[in-house]
Image (cartoon, rainbow, N blue to C red; front, side):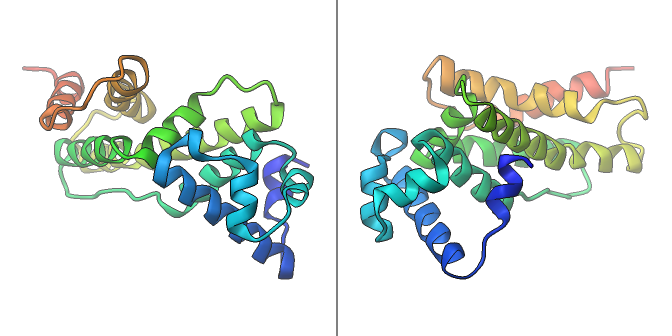
Length: 196
């Protein structure tokens, strides 16, 4: 059984403890990013013992990834404006805004960690797959409307859109300019619908 499946099998007091720990972890991430999160601080906020956290999650890394997985499950939205360019702009705008917050930056950093723990790697992969599949729906909608060719690869389009944002934030440590989402959407559209 995978770590992700084990995680979800909770009820009663166990569910309340898990919810309190996850909310405390996310609260610390929102306030100050990854460096703010220690098992001791999470335990103090959640009103549990550190040993309870280590017994359930095994490590700070697993706790952080589990909190991000929980957050991802609750925050996936897909725009449907009727225009692929507009939907891509909305997606890029939301991502730029999110990654400009302590929580968004922490999420991006956590998902980019080179994890040594196979369970953490599995959870990171699950989150990325879910996010890409959710965002790719805007491209699938455009294909259905005839706005993009049938042979368009939805995943590739989303990767083209979001990779520059991650690159600038995680690698170059740059601020994201306000017109970046529209520029990225236009660049992607130029590839989807080349000039005739």
